[in-house]
Image (cartoon, rainbow, N blue to C red):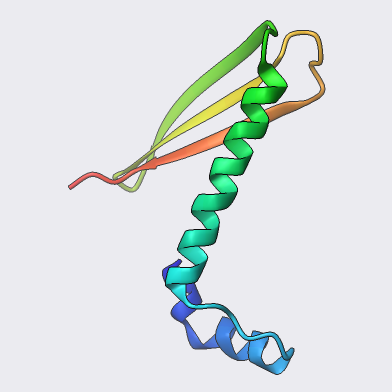
Length: 88
């Protein structure tokens, strides 16, 4: 979200006639979208056999957890969930 504070993205959207919302507003929307997506995924996977692939990585001291989830019956459609872990 801190990227929204930089002048280049702000001025670009202002020039396009659609100024960016505040960082607080964006955070609230991201939380709402994440909640809606979690509910959709929960409904999608209800009473289904699922697969899950979990991978972790460390990039410059920041740890990431990547999760790939999908139905066993529909291999071509899967969801990727990323989790960034802040240490310190």
